[in-house]
Length: 78
Image (tube, one colour):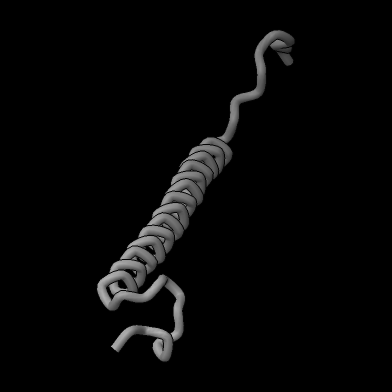
């Protein structure tokens, strides 16, 4: 029987497909992880922007009513 010492064994088509699909799944999961991180960052930024806008509106309303920001309604001028 002839021997081929320098020849690596051929991989089966099944192993090749498994490796390919593993790579595709890994790439997809990585993309999903990055997208989730971006969505979380966007949600936090929108939340912070909304809070800042609400604070600005409350400060404007308090100044328009003639009271200091955070003053109770009973201390506002009539």
